[in-house]
Image (tube, rainbow, N blue to C red):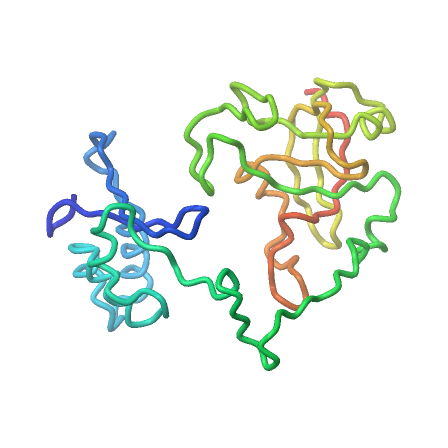
Amino acid sequence: MQAGGQQSVTVEDSMSMVHASAGKLKPASEHLRSEPAIVAGIARATMPNSKVAWTELIADYDRIRDLIERTVPGFEAFNERIRHPGGFRLPLPPTERQWHTPSGKAIFSVYDGVKEDADVLGAENVLRLITIRSHDQYNTTIYAMDDRYRGVFGRRDVLFMNESDLAEHGLEHGDLVDVETIVSGRQLRLKNITAIVYGIAKGSVAAYYPEANVLIPLDYIDKECGTPSYKSVPVKVTRAATS
């Protein structure tokens, strides 16, 4: 609920369908704010002289969609179309065999492999960390503590490891470990996480985000596209220090 009445956000599902989504539960607190309201509040505090009418946008989310319509191709008549049952599908030229390239054909790039950081990953006992989300999670929103994808229930403080890697590190399934990022000049650690056997590739480990975000250096990004290193962070895993 906002100044203009009940609001709906818009979401895109895995099939590229865009539709409206409105909360149905009573807010847990009168102080609870929506994500758009939080973002607008940050913007107002950061840019008090901004030309954007943040308060007006939050009063009526249709105004936000009007700006999206003016800015992003494929969102024509945005507010009208999300009010249709099921919403609408975003245009995806490749699904229509349309390739917006100079030749009009698809262009394939050859991937060079995962050895870009061989100088780091070749060091003794260094593993490659990837961060993942669970089944009961949407982006960074955690709805429950279960992950039926991987057979983990009631907790998220786990580190998925190959059985061979566990043995080589002198560890067993269920041991508490500390994970440390091995990048020059960094002191990033995740302590007291439970190592468990999982069918992950040897040399790789995985942990849930956002919990494992503490291990991701903000400036450790791909040199070409700037993508953060959430799927390739060199780390060392050691038995947790006893207090």
